[in-house]
Image (cartoon, rainbow, N blue to C red; front, side, top):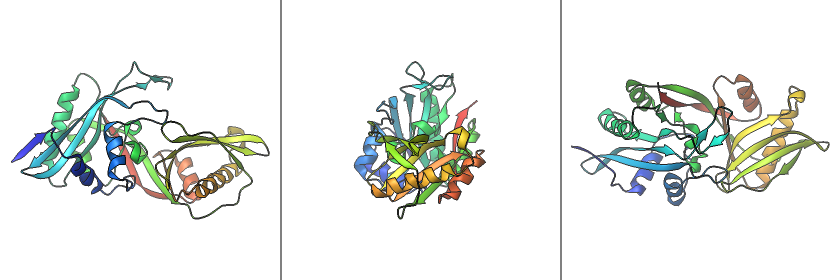
Length: 281
């Protein structure tokens, strides 16, 4: 008999989520998972959620799935600035065993009911994902049963991204130099690229652990795009990270941003698949 409950074993949730094959579910230890699952912050040290709830579904003593949902501590104004006056109802994590849509329906119904139906509800909101997974909150394309259930219940696709991963294996040649700022409270680092003492671009890197990092964004000054400077910047960045002990370097970009996709694939990133976010109309 199915039972939904907010009394659960978090270590069991940890093992259950790790069983879902997803390129950005890094092999983190339980303590890192626990801190991210319960008390997460963004790159600048801001608390992500002002309230967060978790429900699990069991068939007797067998865990079939769980959902984590709540209200965010801030949102984004029309101009992109962060505002504490804005809050989103978000289904942050939602996973259930394939073939057990009955358990999934029970979890999703509980989350939507608790969040309320008078405003737009988001699911797998990128920014509010778990920090131990680089805050990549989108759903991986392989989990089609989860997407199907969301769509059956009024959710539509909001954004689609291409996820990339790269292995760093050595120092690469580049005449671009790195000017790295101090780490933020959330283990992010802002980096400037310089060529002959002139700043030509920049990026933001999120360090997951001693050997894993995520590229949140990168840019090259508009007046020099198409002159090979972007590749030199990436080579300098990859070398900088390799010398810090980073072995795995990931990133993502919008599905319709074919220019960025070409850039990453040209610079030794491997396309891992599509990730998606959702919302109710």
